Image (cartoon, rainbow, N blue to C red; front, side, top):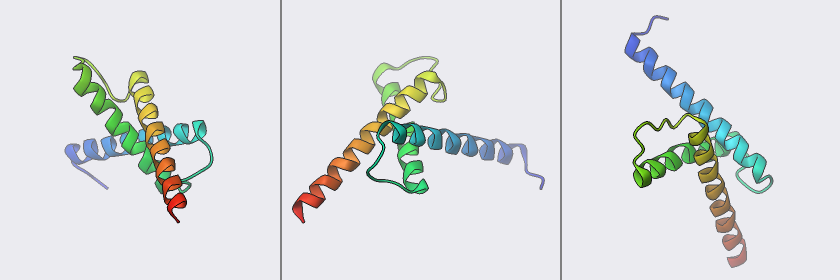
Length: 100
């Protein structure tokens, strides 16, 4: 299958971010085992949310000149944000169970 250079670049970028988001989600779930989300799609969603929101907030707060989201610092920020999302998800689930 022949793709244009632009299509290959976009596909490569999408696959890199999917892999990075999956890695972030798996590491965050390793730090906070149990609870939800348990499916691969849930782990990917938490990882992708963390890998997008964490670096964006860092960039907005500190305005670094040469920050790369896919880097050791970006990985740490992404995992931290994914952990916050997992904790918020669990807190929301606990509130829902309490109201039942």
